Image (cartoon, rainbow, N blue to C red; front, side):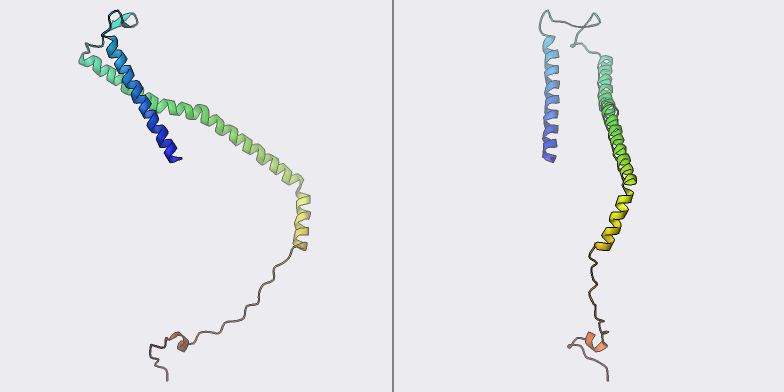
Amino acid sequence: MKTLFKTLLILGLVLVLGAMLLGWGVLHLMGDVPGVHLSIDGDDVFLTGFDIADALGAGLGVIIAIGVMCLVVPLVLLLGIGLPLLIMGALVLAGIAALLGVGAIVGSPLIFIGLLVWLIVRDKPRKPRVEPVAPATPMASASPAQPSFHV
């Protein structure tokens, strides 16, 4: 599973980088073609003459867009899809618990009679007889290689 996720992550990053390169190439090639103009709100945009303020504003806009995509999109997915699924799962589990509780209350006389029959009829395991073990003597604990000082 780990290799599948690593492979999908690498493929996704390759696709994003490829899309960025293609977009950059189209924007720069579009400036060289005569008759093609990029206009935003009726104003022509020229990509060749950026001032430092324009580049700083564009960079700041890209940074803000990346931050929004990294923060807002996961939260929307979590709260918009994950939370309703979690609530539905909790409701289903609560319904199952309620049904089991009602079943236990309704069937409690049968469960009690079944418990009594099982206690009466079951095979009781007999405890094996354990013979007492003689206490160890000090002589038995000494090894033959060690001298004994008992007289």
